[in-house]
Length: 437
Image 1 (cartoon, rainbow, N blue to C red):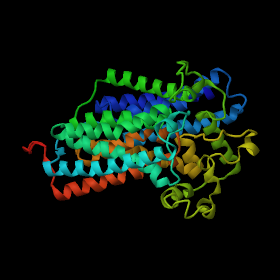
Image 2 (image 1 turned 180 degrees about the vertical axis):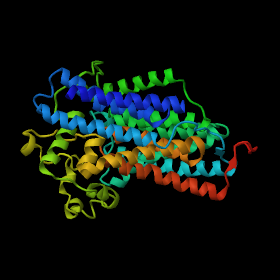
Image 3 (image 1 turned 90 degrees about the vertical axis):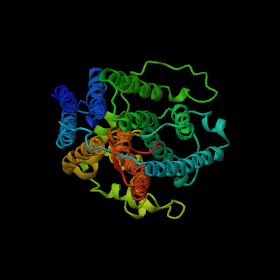
Image 4 (image 1 turned 45 degrees about the vertical axis):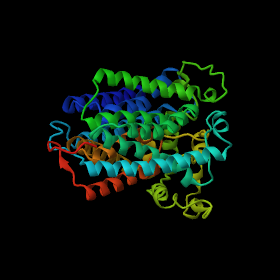
């Protein structure tokens, strides 16, 4: 029964992707890049673990059936929600583009954001003794005691999106190229020398989607599939060789990434996610939105000002795996690995129990709706769609905690600058002649 449910999850993903592409002919439809992520964590990974009998030391068969049934329902809910907004007949007719003044506002805003991001990144590097010290140890990088400084480096991403949007609507000038390279390069260095999957995925999606969506073009589906496989392989390669990618390393890396999928480890996303669901169900312990509330209203308050903030709001467990690792030893007899993430469905189940599934429908609709607006209307909707697409790896593979604060940091500045652009220079229909930027 368990294996049948694994194939059911893969079938739901495949059916959703086929329907989405058949209706939209858009390789950037949400299901075209999120589907493989769902298929990996809820299909391919448990299939490989089960074939190697790697799950037997952690779960009984009825527990696996329970967890995988929830996973299938969760994937189905997201797919149905995403497709419910419609994907047939979604065309770019009536899209509105930028005037010269609006584009200038985006560039100016992007330069400000990018400069803040570069300065914050440079400060964090200087704090650890410079570039070599920051990247001469595995999985390291810069640091600052202030979370505001650490997180401000992410402003380089919205800066890149805004400047690319303005330049691609008119003409790419040397100044734009210098800005784009300046604002993306620190993150390329960070992603490689710290072997981080999230930043690597964000870089690829931000660059590719910013180009194609603003040009109203799409790469061929074969090229997209090859690129997706290459990206997935790169992410597994980075994680497998995380201890060998640093300045001064001999770079004796391995291309065998099977351990990341098949290794029976309590930090494996599927094993850890299943354990989190079973532990919360057996203890009947759920957060009912309190963790997400804390991310929005409590996290922004500096720990230097309020060092016991999570404990004071009744969430001391937030300090360990974002509150997802509670109760493993008493309910399952083993502990989840420190730093592990359970994946989207498990995280929502911990938070809202059975209400997680209608919420997955809502999330699916949000992704589908923003895609539809990006295709039909363009303008600021493209930038927002790039943002939520770039964060999709955190959304599917990690926790909402990993998504919420990143979304706020990336999305709010973009909306603010676009609002200013539309106030200063009214958007004009694309068929009208516009001044060259």
